[in-house]
Amino acid sequence: MTIPDKAIDAVIVGAGFGGMYAVHRLRSMGLSVHAFEAADDVGGTWWWNCYPGARCDVESLDYCYAFDEALLHEWKWSERFATQAEVLRYANHVADRYGLRDNFTFNARVNGCIWDEDAHLWTVTTESGDRVRARFLIAATGCLSKPHRPDLPGLDDFAGNVLFTQAWPKEGYDLAGKRVGVIGTGSSGIQSIPEIARRAAHLTVFQRTANFTLPAVNRPIFPEYEAEIRADYLGHRRTILQNKAATVKQTIAESAFDLSDEEREAAYEDKWQRGGAGGIPVLFADSLTNPASNEEAANFVRRKIAEIVEDPETAESLTPRDHPIATKRICLDTDYYATFNRPNVTLVDLKKTPIERVSAGAIITANAEYPLDVLVFATGFDAMTGPLRAMNVRGSGGQALEQVWADGPRTWLGLMVAGFPNLFTVTGPGSPSVIVNMIAAIEQHVNWIADLIAHMRETGQTRAEPQEQAQEEWVDEVRRVAETTLYPLARSWYNGDNIDGKPRMFMAWLGGYPVYAQRCDEIAAAGYAGLELTA
Image (tube, rainbow, N blue to C red):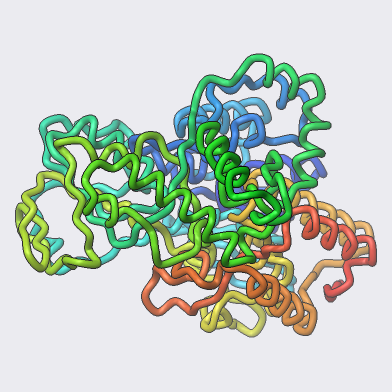
């Protein structure tokens, strides 16, 4: 699309599900809109993350837009948990259906956003020299879009291929006959390791931290279940939005100790066999607040690891013992633990034998050398704040967002930041974000932003900024709610622990989707209490 040469209503950054819906929603209001995307097409995280085994961990029938009932019914998912390729096809279908690409400039990475206090406008620039001025800036940059790429001693000397799960070659990569090393056992590692093991001559997994993962039990969608959902799809959507994670309710009792030992074990076993989102850690409402209840769930999974993994030493290395279950992102897998029974798979526990350096053809640890042809980094992201800080945002008085957030992100509702007028962050830090069904959270945020903009247009306002006191109250609320749970006990990217020097701060609202959405609605109904609106 041609870059506008005059000021427009809104500029949007990102072509994932947040950016696409923001374009559609604002454009339908009659606003002039332009959007930038660093990739060469729509899809966001589903465009970038095309590594072997990449798959959604929210049930397909729930991981989709609900803004148009016709769209809900016309798209047919093939599997319970869609592959990356199928989710990307869905994103492309949405873009085609609503003509969304007409408002995007692709291959355009935003590298500057400057607020003009006199004109009440943002100036947004890209690395390729594009420049747009707009009343509103909507950052739909995704929570997991800025990769973390650790610098290992000697990495530049490695003569083989270095791959990243976050930027896997679009044309694919043939691993047949290769000696492959994977560093990282978070979600992308856990999904890709079984697939890589089936293709490679030998796979060496370098595990920094053992992680809990549960069986997905993926399968084609049961026709009778799909028919039941489609009979009242919007009603189903309203129902799941009343649940804390905005997905199908999993909780069966308030406490793990409401059941007898035998009943509790049977409930865990039933869930393990059925698999799926949420799963064992949310069967009981107190599993993430009561250490004893959490330990019951964790011990069940630990027993399963010991049953599945044949070598006792390997099983113990794979068994998490340093954090409560689900306080790091819980993963869903297909044959992850069983993969370590394969004769062509080796596990290296880096807590016991750290990596010392990389050579031209191997990784060298404290007590061994592992020859490799390919090195794969599955080392995660600078989550939630990283993509926003990378935009080089300058607000009132030229203050930099990265400086304002030097001690951790401070937002109002995870939607706006004091000192940065007319800047909106879709599923930003301080909102339910990564803890809930992301597409539900995206729709709620974009709708709230659109309603505020409509209100400002109706009342002649051109500038919206959170009050400092309202923001500080919300930051305190996010912290207080997190401290009532077990989440802060884990060293995780939820707390920023995976990035050296990043301030430790739990970055998501843990009060649940329905409570959060109601709070946002109440603020809007009260004339946007907590915001300064000026002309």
